[in-house]
Length: 114
Length: 111
View (cartoon, each protein chain N blue to C red):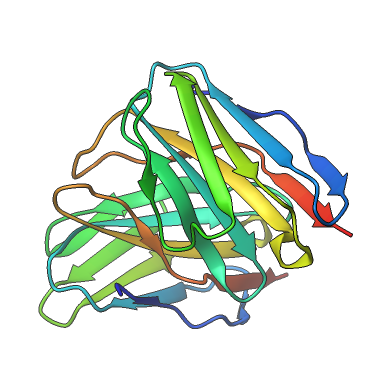
């Protein structure tokens, strides 16, 4: 089975801190994604990556950046955390682009910014 | 902006009944349609995928797609309390096939 591992289940940070969320997948997937999930708003795409060192903005990239130096690892960076970035962050991967390619999700990181 | 609309619910059905979950989408170029199930406190997992008009059945689950009406639905037959979860509809277009998610419908199956 594909495993997508997010480094922290719960994280509490202060406003203005730089925050790193790490995600690792073990199935040699090409594509990786970062979503945030908020009550009533569903999953919203922050950034995604088709391959190593590639990154594309999603629907809500403001305040975030990403890094993909190795194929298996996709990091989400909050340059200066703000309270409105308190959310559940979900990392996902998929084998490649394609009509029937599904996403595999990590277990999520609940981030609280105080 | 591509939009995927779902009724947030909760949809409450008795055990053994058919649960019907609906989803509409705005992008006529959409080609892939997914249903993910998300239990409370857990991450989403894929339960159904469909890309051609008509019905696709997998056990108690049936996905229905009508591209002309831009409508996709999920039927759950013989609903069980273990089906209680939030069901997320996701739609992807050709090229990148980046899925856009709806806000999800909460399903409650009561004994």
